Image 1: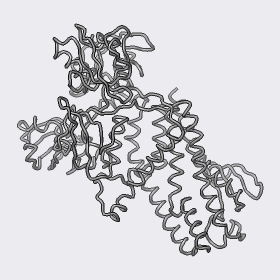
Image 2 (image 1 turned 120 degrees about the horizontal axis):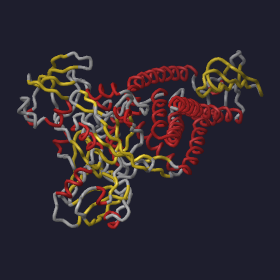
Image 3 (image 1 turned 30 degrees about the vertical axis):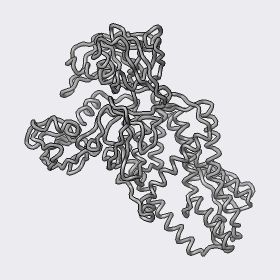
Image 4 (image 1 turned 90 degrees about the horizontal axis):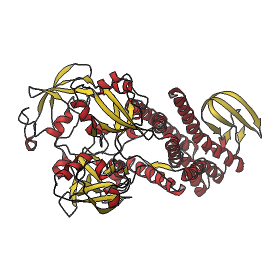
Length: 624
């Protein structure tokens, strides 16, 4: 079934990706015929001809490589006289006819996008549940800047000559607590540190590492802060929007509006935003945050139902304390044994509201009536989990009698088992299943059963209008292009830009987009795949309308200039510009494709759903 599914995904990707190009060229064809321009050939696909025929002087062919197609329209050239492939001279194409023909390609992409968007309006698209805030989980005191010879996958063997078994991330968050045992200077007095590191091949080497203070920590950001705004703009879509707003921030600083437990007035925290090496130098934050804990369901007849809680409610705080995890929720409830009611602040559909619930004697999820979904999203091959019969999409209810409400609690129980047999209770297709004698396998200092868990709220199906889908892609494309050209425009205007600027290397070409489409289809099915095709076809139209030679926008620009000055542009000038931009475009595509191939392994790993081997899991667990 996996092979069939993968073949189906490949066929979907080739067809729709190619169709976006085909419909673009088909628009040029129809407009050229309408404007009475000479069309020599229209090809579906590229390469050697398989079959074809000639009608109305146009050769229609089907070629071997099924990636879109092309149309040959000699009169789109700005020269006074143009020639066909066989050397026949043609009259100069009228400026308006050329502009209409050039515009028709992007226009047909937009039409195609609206047709698909109308279909998805009825069917619905996957979207993350709305979240008007994010909970800060960790804030590094030392930035994990992988420099001075240190790489992300390295393991630290010794610090200042003191044996140590950990990663740079351990130092990042625990610098102060490890200060005395590892002979580290205080954060306020940072100085170079001697590290002995071991790479993935097991080779050890000594380097001098220069730590850099965490600017987010220095600015005052702390765990359990709840972020509501970035640069004055309110969050609506939670974690994904938060990271996107950071990555697309073209300003030198990022300003966060946070709500801190115990304080009534929101705080403004501003700091210089630095490139994050873990995200190709984008301005993705170094602090980690997550969407508020969401209730997956409410048990009938429970205190939570009586209090008015509903499935999907996000738990922001209880007794005035931020709910950073289900564990912190129940710890806070147990810290107030005399309380008979608990005052919650929740968010529902992006709006905050208070709710009070009567507290039962036993303060756990089931007694309160809260359902938290912890789902198995991957089972590794040849693992104890696979041998025991655990499956993709099983919901974990209990492990050794302990109610499982978050993934980290499950991981800790497995680690603490030390390989002893465990009993796990699952929910599968609405039925409870109990599996006994599940033993974790030792992997270094860890114990693993070979599963990946997901405790985040599932995406919901929403019905966005075609216009909303169009404007979303337009705004995203415009924002990306403005940031790509900002180094130039900022020099002209004299404004400062962010050090974590969006660059050409962050763009994706055919390889990257195809990989993204493959991953989206694997994780979100046809809905996700069709949503991405809509983004691709709209984006193809917007980019082609840029007024650069060799693009459709360049043809339109030359045609309008010719119409204004009422004579053809100098052939040598146009040829010179087109050759330069054609060379730049080829170089750009090679550069982008090269970067696509570099990031491809990480991308495939992020989207994999065919379970890798247990041996691979053990190897990954040993590297940070």
